[in-house]
Amino acid sequence: MELLQQIVQNVILGVVQGLTEFLPVSSSGHLTIAQHLMGMADIEKSNLFLDVMLHLGTLFAVFVFYRKLIWRLIKAFGSMVKDIFTGKFSFRKMDNDRNLIVMLFVGLIPLFLLFIPIPGTGMKVKDYVELFSDKKYFIVVGFCLLITSLLLALGMFFSKRVGGRRFKGEENSEYTGGGRTRYGVVDAILVGITQAFATLPGISRSGSTLAVGQMRGINKQAALDYTFVLGIPAIIGAAVLQIKDVELSAYSGTDIIAMACGMISAAVVGYLAIKLFKWLLKTDKMIVFVIYTAVVGLLVVGVSVYEMVSGSFVSFV
Image (cartoon, rainbow, N blue to C red; front, side, top):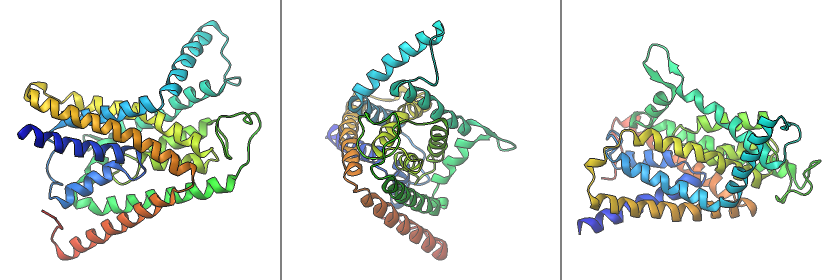
């Protein structure tokens, strides 16, 4: 009975992880909201291994969904390295796959900003950002969700402005609709900076980076593919940073089975979430997420103001 209960709990967590990791609603924001309303905001994570397993589940979903693109990029990377060492590489004559590889590396550079030490505090930027998950900063989550809503709305607006306009040299692209299909250095850096800011609870990584790409005139489907592939190192990084603190000896075989079920549910739901996201984007139904993040953001701000005025915390348990 205890095993069944663990499996059910972990499967539910996997479903939440799979949905919020990829849909533009902010997984960290929803986790903070859930902890706050359940009176858990001050409780330190006690199951790091489960968190790692869930992240690996969502990572598996990305690999399966983008397996063809990832395999193409691996082969393109190998041939590019060979050309670099033989002196045949040309930055200006890169094909789409090589361009995407280079821009992925460029887009990851701003993430290193998170590891810059803050003088006099003994903390890094990422440590400071994590403080905003505390319940006394609950209002920050609300404002960040409103920022996500605004960014998604701006992304929709700029995408419609591009219309069906195609660009020279991109007429035969696999992507339909308007906008550039190739990222430039400035595009990649701006998206990378946005991804770094998305560590704040309430700012969706997938939604904000997609929106910035659209605002830069990138084709919306190309922008979404770049967003998800760019997220692979981020997910791996999060798992690696956590797994070093995991003590496997503290978990029984029953725990491992239950966590594996959570990982599987995160993978399955994550795969379906990517599919749903791409369909909603293609059919111009992103307004659903604009409204959702705006409503939830306003509710969180409202609850926060009430708590500040009343001096008591809202909890459902």
